[in-house]
Length: 120
Image (tube, rainbow, N blue to C red; front, top):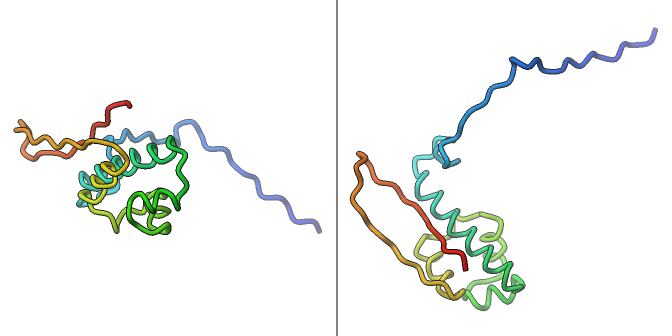
């Protein structure tokens, strides 16, 4: 006797759930340090963009930033736990970027951290 192939049911239209994110994936997943994590990710993204646009290899980038190549690889892959924001600021400086930090009053009960990058 031949076994029957299981019938795969397609999801019904009403089985779908759409969730609107906050704009910060780290907040959406409940990380306590969501604002800082998002800021670091945005800084790392800018660094990645600069490295890619410059055509530097990871070895050349490591020399310019004063770190070893495996750390460059971690940075480019978004593995940021070993990098403070201050260190990322320094990398941006070494890649020819000015970094400006602005502190302003807020009307909310708690402030937030945002990163803005001017198009080069």
